[in-house]
Length: 55
Image (cartoon, rainbow, N blue to C red):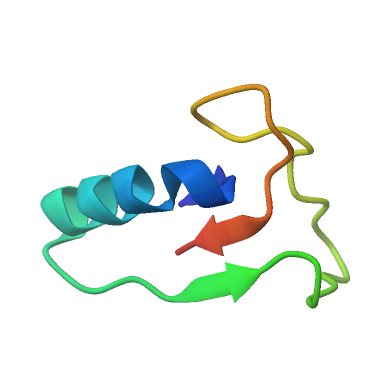
């Protein structure tokens, strides 16, 4: 699972496919609320705000 900015979306997709050998689901964090989980505020690869969840 990766929380990433738009700029690092391709990196997250590549790593996910390499690790799990399957296509991930992509969730827009601006449009989705989670009852029991707060996503990280920053991208997993930089200091920009995380806008997508790759899972």
